[in-house]
Image 1 (cartoon, rainbow, N blue to C red):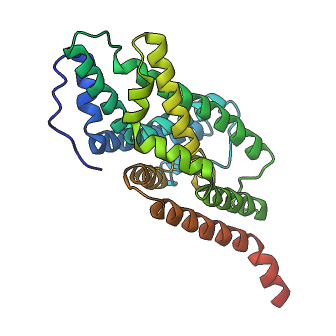
Image 2 (image 1 turned 30 degrees about the horizontal axis):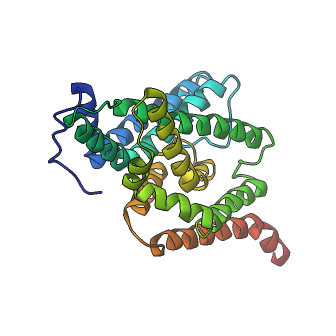
Amino acid sequence: MSEITDQSLDHLSLAAARLGFVAARPRAVAVTCVVALTALGWLYIGIVQGERGNLFAALCEPLSGAGTIEPGGTILALAMWCAMVLAMMLPSAAPMILTYAEIADTAARKHAPVVSPFVLTAGYAAVWFGFALAATAFQIVLARAPLLDVAAPAGWLVSGALFVAAGLYQFSTLKQACLRQCRSPFPFFFTNWATTTRGVFRLGIKQGLYCLGCCWAAMLLMLALGAMNVLWMTILAVVMTLEKLVSGTRFSYAIGAVFIVIGLVFVVSAFAPIWLGRFI
C-alpha cells in the first residue's frame, strides 16, 4: 500500500482534514487496527475462558474460537465481528475516503457546500456493521449444529465448503463488477456527488455495498480460520487491500485458485480418517 503525504486539505474542517490525513496513510491505519485487534482478541479469550476459571490456559491458546459460542457470549461475538470488519476493511477503504476528502476540499475551495467525510465513513461502516450482525447469527447457527468443530469431519467439510465457495466467487461477474467500483471511486463520486448529509451518507452506503459485494465471501473465511485469529485476519486484510490496488483480473483469479485448493485440502482431510481406516 502506497503512502500519500502531500494532501493538505486546507479548506475542510480540522476534524475532516485529520480524517483525510489518516486515510492518506493506509499502512499506518492497517498496523494500528492489527495492534488493536490483537489486544481485543486476547481480551475476548480472557473474558470467555476466565469465566470458566481457566484464564492461564486461555492466554496460552491460539487466537481462534470461531467454532464455539459460549453461553451468554453472543454480545462478545458481535463485538468481535464488528471489530474485525472495521480492522480488515477500513485500510482498504482509506483510498476511497481520501478521494472524497480531496473532492470535498476542492469544492470547499470554490465555496460550494460540502459534507464532512465522517458522514461518508459512517455510511460505509453501517453496511459492514450489518454484515457483522449477519455473520454473528451465521456463526451461532453453525456453532450450535455444531458444524465448525474441526475435531469432527463436519467441521472440516464446512471449512472446505467456505473456501471453495469463496474461491469460485472470485471468478464471478458480480465480484469483478464490485471490485471495479472499489478500485475507481473517483468516477462514482464525480457522477453521484451530493451536498446534503443524507445524500453523502447514502454515498457511503453505496460504496460500502460495493465493498461488501467484493469481499463478503473472503470475510466469511474467518469462520474457518478462527474468528479473532490475528495472523489470518492480517493476511486476508492485506490480500483484499492489494486486490483493490492491483489492476486487471489475474491477481483476483489467483486468489480464487488458492482458496479453491485450500478448500479441497480441507475436504480431503475430512475424509482422510475414513480412507485410512479402510487400509489399517
